[in-house]
Image 1: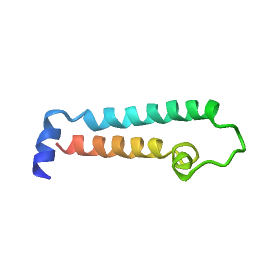
Image 2 (image 1 turned 180 degrees about the horizontal axis):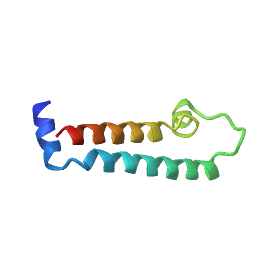
Image 3 (image 1 turned 90 degrees about the vertical axis):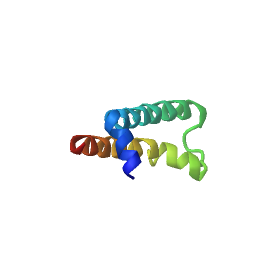
Length: 74
């Protein structure tokens, strides 16, 4: 953990940028799947996580907030 925090101390904005990238990736995935998968068609569990559950969106926001909190402490 100490090595991770030492690396994070050199670039404290990286977790926030990763979080923003995940949020943008969630938007792109949802947009692509909107045109590929017809509405009303049952989807697999993996596609459910990416579309209806917004997995990437939630991960991106959580990583960004944790990155902000850890960046302030360092």
